[in-house]
Amino acid sequence: MNSNNVAKLIENGTSIVVHSGNITNWIPLHKKQTLSTSDTIVSAVEAAIKNWMGREYNAEEWKGPGSVLIRNASLLKSVSAEELRDHQFTVKVFLAESNGDALRSAVETTMNELGIRSIHLLVVSLAQSAEELTLEQLKPVWKAMEELVHNKTVVSLGTGGLTQPRLQELYEWAQVKPKVNQVNLPDCCDMPMELVKYSKEKEIQLQTNNDEADVVPTNVLCDVLSSTFGSDCSAWKQTWISRYTSVIHLRSIVTHKGYLLGLHRT
Image 1 (spheres, one colour):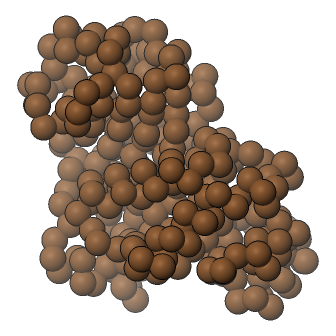
Image 2 (image 1 turned 180 degrees about the horizontal axis):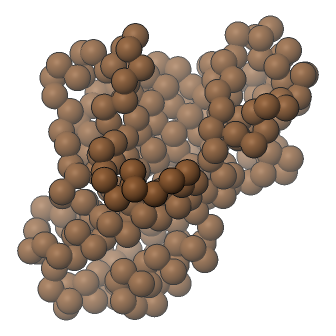
């Protein structure tokens, strides 16, 4: 990518989407031990931007005035027709703030990049800590998720890191009930009994992970963009991050895993 085109993007751009590609068998990632979710995203985003900058200008990646899609072309893997039949796709969206439009954008962009028609499980996580998060903050996002279920884009819904009181509030309010609540790994060995009991009663599956609430802090993202683009990126704000995984049905074999990062200029 010509340095003039990169400068043009930084100066005149309004939105950027970065796609890591399929990192399931990405060798640099496997050389590093016990990476956090944040570190994994940072490494994948840096690699995607560097790959994009090292390639020739591609007009198809400019999605309209001020909008660009950055892909790691070396890791792009299309989803075959057979995989569409036999695989289940899970998408987790990390939102910087409660925004239904941002949730929709994340889901639409992810599905378009993968070429899939439906998502088996859609999970949402907001940047606020579990203790600070309120039902009112969840409502706009959950309504957008329910729309995706109603139009058969998504089969089931899940949440990231809700406490038992908040999970109960959401369950009682929501039309489409959560089927999954993901719990951060450090807490998995000492889960509150009230959360376990309530989840069992309502048939909500508890899953463990090591996802941070604020998965990529603003200062970390700014450092990544500044170092890769070579210019000040403080005007760019993360809107959403999505993580997609596909598993062969009934075999638990992961065939696709990757991240997309949505940015806009403030």
